[in-house]
Image 1 (cartoon, rainbow, N blue to C red):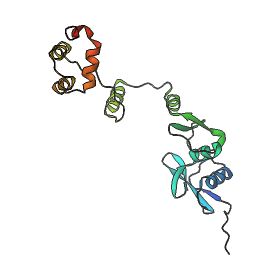
Image 2: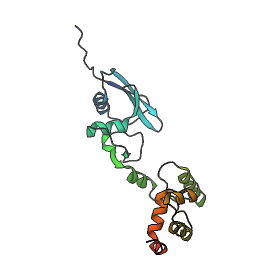
Image 3: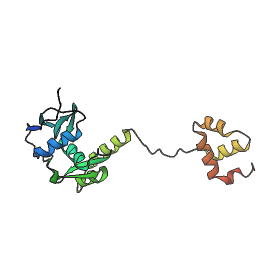
Image 4: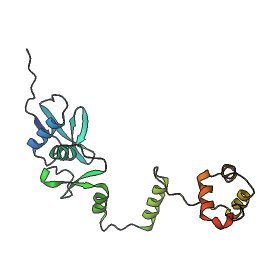
Length: 182
């Protein structure tokens, strides 16, 4: 009968990151869903130290913080290196921060040129996601006149290429134009 046990993990630091090998080994065992090999290499992955866990590459600083908190970090939470050294992954150098605070911390005192601000504005304009649309200008008097003559809100919406809720809200905002149709 074969008994499968987790052997102690040996960490080989290929990238020269500042790590506490015993913490990294315990974090790998914590994160592993199955028995894991006895040897793990810490390598440079992008700008950070990385390690393979469950056949997936993970950043060491994130793995250590998740192990320390005993849970996966929620989306929008970042692990910050207190001394700004991205290769210093000792627990004493790591802190969890919300995304907007992390960004503002790194951008504190940054000065942008006019060209750079224009590039940021252009990138934000092209970005997918929530976009604040400009309010469309519609001929309210014409809409009110057509509505008073008996045209439906749906037919007015088709005529002006907008949603029916836009027509309804514009009519509600201008009740003085609808005095004839009561």
